[in-house]
Length: 384
Image (cartoon, rainbow, N blue to C red):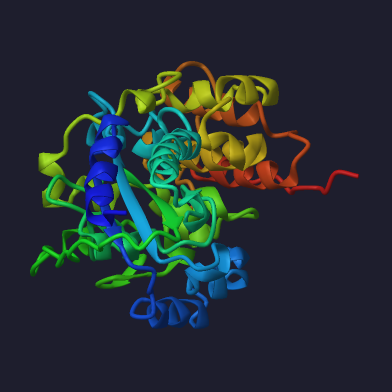
């Protein structure tokens, strides 16, 4: 079989399926493995135990698909039309949701399209009577795979200093991969083009990018609002601002993202999440949360952590509305009615509506939030 011709066809078929770019690499990740192991040794993965548990599989593609020879990498943009992230961040009454999560869950979209691409490859292999030579598996952030390293080796993206994959048209994209036993000719690896720029490092709200190409997840707002199951450390709560699911600051300030284009229609904004008020989102019941966010990546954190995150954002909004610092005592009794401070009173009312929530996690974050407006914290009793 002419595998060079097949590689060219794969790229054509991939573009027909909507992928912006398709590249091919080998299956050797030995150059990237030491960085991963050092990151784990330093404990920078936090509570993401799966990163340590599956590190060996991440470093050995053939352990996932025996006899893997080639990796087909794809890139699918998701930047939603008219999603003004900086405006939302500057509006403390709104909830900021990471741009990747404003629409449909990317896992299914990319996996479905990768499967269609694999089906086309299968048909070509069958036509060449090489059926037994073709085994494969498709991945979309669904297994221990070094997506960014394969993107770099295949020439479709480099690793930015924020550790995300980056191209000359920015970083607002998803990656996906097909492991295959076919001996496809690899593309040329891409070099990085960040130069001396450090904007992503400079703007990180929690200084989570501890050095170029190094992120301490334990400080990252995306980790704190998505991956962390328990209480958000108090030191980070004021820094979270109004970010209720993820954080994009490093991407919003990346010069390459000035050239971003609108992403795939599958990721169009749902439920008005690009401009929703915190108080409205905080009022969602558990059933409403599940119904509204069906098919959204946000749903996986559950209603309890959703409320936890929004309580922190409401606390930060309350602090701005009242002019109090996070640890300062009020110089006068807090306004609690009479319309003298309607904005602050509205925030307090939203928070107090969850003061007796069944979850101790939610109650603790609500009390912290109320204290940001100089309310006297109420002792939290464990619910039997």
